[in-house]
Image (cartoon, rainbow, N blue to C red; front, side):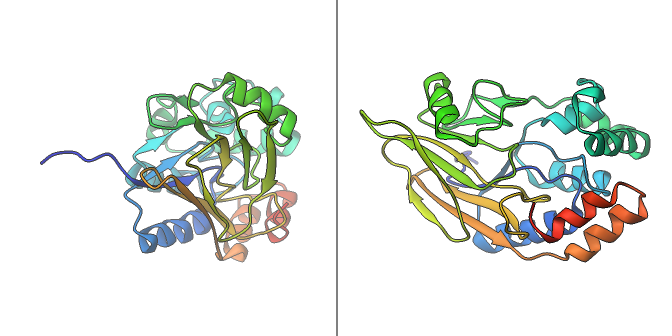
Length: 249
């Protein structure tokens, strides 16, 4: 049977060991009829169900990048580079995770430039750490990127930046059901975060990208936030990691 490249891709990112959010997003993706799921990294960190999230991601995602939290858990990044809460969660994750799942995280890379769009956990300039939240940074990334369209995660904010011929880059946050035509201009898009949104909308986020039609539709999904919070508290992780989920911050 001939392999056809995926035309309708579900982009997900920053799951952060939030199983209820990931399950809700996977259901929404299935209902939308996406051909493949591409994950931009940070499967673990912050949340309390890392093994379940790695196993679901391994099962469902055709591509998965490594995020900075994944690299912290595998030991590839020192924990002192992380905030206190993130460091505590990363150490807890190292101590509790199935070694086979940690080994799988260790096989991942923070970028993939072999697709029709560029894929980076954080940015084309710095795939691990850079937060692209301003038009100025987007401008520098658009200069650096080799693909006309790139996707990034890391900031947990659903957004898009575009640079048209002869103009400076502009960007805006993306709300549920925002639809864009990506057929002209240079683009940097962020699906938002599955497991820890930081754009004021507590619903889990993902992005449906049609690589043929060159369209992007941002999606938000309700999930059982209380269940994710209860798991974080039961694991005795910092309360702030549970509290913030209610606010999308």
